[in-house]
Image (cartoon, rainbow, N blue to C red; front, side, top):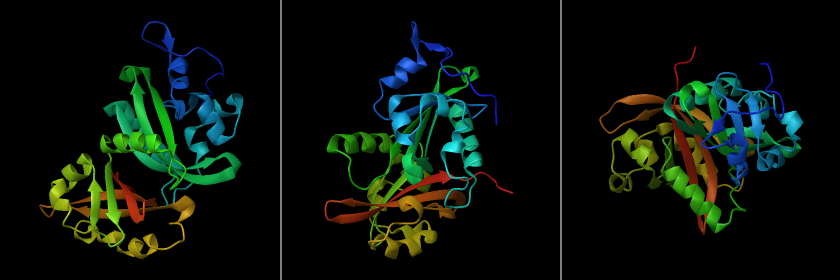
Length: 257
């Protein structure tokens, strides 16, 4: 394990005397500060301590992948997934994804994970926010906040009806697929990614989708121009009023051995 960051030690500052700790305590969602190179947790806010069910002294110094099962549902090692996302956030400034996290009570729970670089690249500090993907229990205000964040996400977000037709797609998905949102409205997921087919029946079931209500799989996405790209897809089931929907995150998949 990398050398732990000493608990309570001073962190780099942002702005006029405001520390990173001050900033993350203002955020209501669970948030960690993680070293981009070391993947080690440097600090955590109170919401993160509650989510993971640990004391600050037990959390600071852990590798961030220690807060996940060793392997994600699609077989990807959690350590490899974190390394990839931290590197992307460091180089590009931000990143989003869906991870199964091991939270308080040893429960494996899918979470939207948002990564943001704090300060210049050479500072190497990444803030990591966690939003548990529970189908129920969010206030309308929280749902609105989450919806806005997902629409702005650089990761593709697809929302499907139970028959596989498109209900919604964020701008990143429209750009990746080469369709306008109004054009996607007349398509089904089979026309851009056939690997979803087996999930549609499961989406109508009362049974949760896979581990923690999440299915993650590797697939090949087909663009409008006929070109394809290798992707990692994370899908979970939500209920919107009387409508049951499949909600998917689609991320580029790095070359694997």
